[in-house]
Amino acid sequence: MFSKSVKENPAASGFVLDFDGTLSEIVLDAAEVSPVTGASEVLTELAGKYGLVALVSGRRAEFLAGLVDAEGVRYIGVYGAEEFVGGRLVHPPEADRWRGTASRLARDAEALITTEGLTGCEVEYKELAVSLHFRAAPEYGGLLVDWAKTVAPRRNFEANLGRMVVELRPVGVSKAETLRRLVAQSGVRYLLAAGDDHADVEALLAAKDILGQSAITVGVASSEEPSGLREASDLVVSSPAEVVAVLGEF
Image 1 (cartoon, one colour):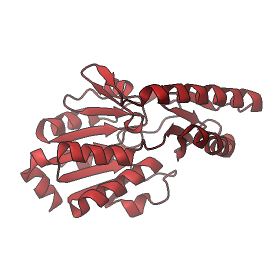
Image 2 (cartoon, rainbow, N blue to C red):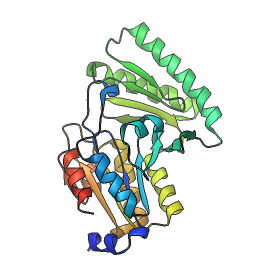
Image 3 (tube, rainbow, N blue to C red):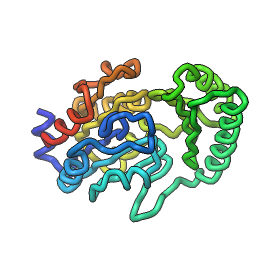
């Protein structure tokens, strides 16, 4: 029934999708990521038919646009804090304040890693947010998470756990809020949302909260899947390739 409604109402239908772990495999070196076979092609086809096709990621939006060359797709990065539009980044009015806070947090995190000897941990400064990666040193994950949860709230940022990463981002910036904004802006009445991580669970739940049975949620299972992913998902698949296959049905 959902598939039929989407196909019969293309202008009023949309797709909001995570990237890492959903349209790409998780890799040890985050810079080496790439979309799985067929992802760019199916996104291009969807964007040519439907009212909304958006990638919402913790990645930088410009980096995302370079990875997935799909005309008509919206590239939204840093959980919604930026969008790559017409060859340039678009930020909200609060961006200057966020930028300064993120810079200080990144410096403090680098100092922590150096002082404590957390070999294998990495700081990724995203201009408006900071990611602390510990995939190469999972034994230090707890220490980084505890530090982030102590420090971030003092600066009006939040610390959120991801897959072998802790994300420090401005309060109120989230995939769930971004999904709500996209639905309101686009006016879509039918939506497919897909993701695999902690932040995605909130977005999947938001899709259901907004559109009820007119939203279909797809969760990507993994050995690192967050609590609540299956409960938030109408359909659970085992790989990004399966996500592409599901999208191909539309």
